[in-house]
Image (cartoon, rainbow, N blue to C red; front, side, top):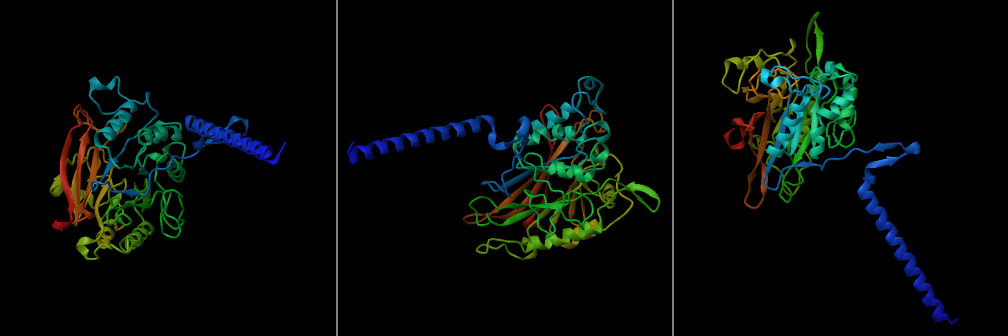
Length: 416
């Protein structure tokens, strides 16, 4: 055989090998897509380890200049179908269970299409479940199914089952699409994909999340809204008296540090945010137990209903004083007292209850379960979206019409 024939045969063989390789590769990719292989690690004895599904990060405003948060307070989830409802009408009781809570959360996500979900404690009712992990999966199931980024803090009942508070926050931080963190990392920065630990801070679930400007805008690479999450604890004994826990000095010190860092953040150097007080980037805070100043709001103008005494700590650790001094927190969102759903202003900062969400938590028969929506809007510049200009809120009721009530403006840059 001459050299040309040999070369031709070699080329044909190489071409055939390439085709076989390409076909095999395409088959593997197709199989992976059909069987979700990228989400699993295969071990011996047919065991699999599932990998957490990561939310699209960073959090950022939409193309239309808005960012919407759904606050869910006090789900009090038990075990599911067999966990009965509390404080509902007699006509509703027979077929009412934790599944009503699940159904309400799914309806809300569809109706409001939020960008982010914030769970503000008592997510599960620990004393009503023999398995905390199972209850967490069921409670947060609709959030995970939605694929939306979500975060949680703990209340005073979450740890009453089979996990302590550190274990709970660690577990929550590893759930699909969760951007929760156990605590801030030791260098003071927070990264929702790494779950860093900071040992010199009280509690578990202290962290901050930054929300960036709209895609393609001048501030697309700048964080223009900060979300603080704090662990308000559960129960404590103070001077021999049993009381609710409180936010500690170490947490407030961290809060001051992060706030200062946020104001001197890594902005886009070509389009820095104006440093004047009126244009300081705003922040929101989320925790479970109200602070001792909240009872004052009984004597002030509020939006919503004040229907029960405020169950706060006997200890005033200076949370309000700290929030006023750092200047960027415009509103605080809390839970704990299920039949309070009002917003009231203390020293220029709004304190808002989410209202009882879950059907296994106490409530008021004939008073629908509810949730709070927080809606931030950007300023429209000449050619681009700019910083946050306004923050509004309203509530949604779990009634036939998913009624929208008590809409109000919490902060407007031009009314400060």
